[in-house]
Amino acid sequence: MTTAKKWSAKVDTESTYPESGLFTKSPTVIAKALASKKVSPKGPASGMRMLNFYINRAGKNLSASHHKALERAKTILSGIIAEQHEKAPRKAAKKHAAKTHAKKAA
Picture (cartoon, helix red, strand yellow):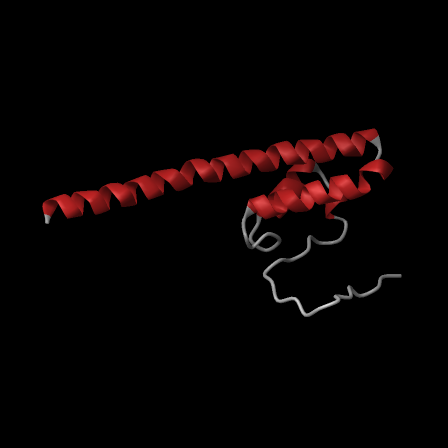
């Protein structure tokens, strides 16, 4: 029996929830889902927070193999986050270089 989520106040955020049963799937499926814009519209870092929250809340009741799979999902997800951070500074550096070049030319 599932119950609807009850909020004590009106909340208007972009946060979403992962699909039910997601954390029972394979580590790569978990990581890719939590990195997606559908589950984590604010980016994969919010997906990492969801995964950490789940591990901390359900960690006492998880089997050792399942806990290890979730830790593997964290590793994969942190790789996705690192990959995005590598791409982002390059774009910012190009924009900065273009702006400084335009100022010097003027």
